[in-house]
Image 1 (cartoon, helix red, strand yellow):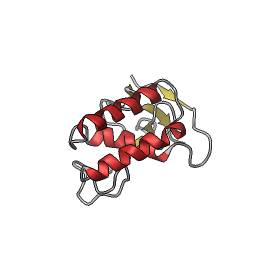
Image 2: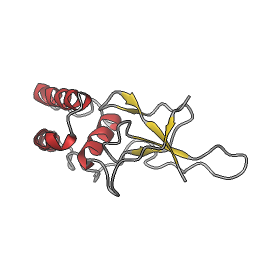
Image 3: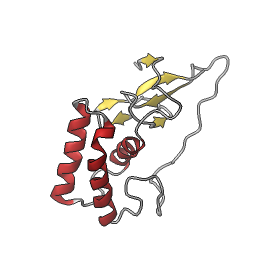
Image 4: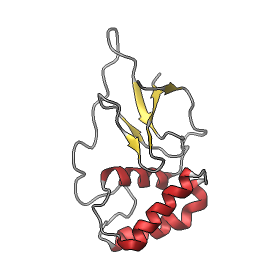
Length: 142
């Protein structure tokens, strides 16, 4: 069962942009780039600190370091969303149709509201945040 909530992050552009990029990178490309032992320790450090409640803005130096490691490993955009090769699978999926006879529309988002990651739910609602090791939370659309 999907738990819905009406909680919305503060501000029109709420969330830490690189945290959202980090979460999407962990979801789309875990283990696909050899970052070496230092890179894996950095990823573990970032996820541990975020799970412990440290604000993402306090980890900007670690995000910078990860960005550099990704660039050196050949990921041409670092943590950014610009890619020179297509992302495997569909990049965007159509939203379900609304109206009579259709379930209420909702999207899945960061479980803590710290980043701007948003996904269309799959049938089993299995999308997870790999930063916080939790399922994405459902947010009803108005």
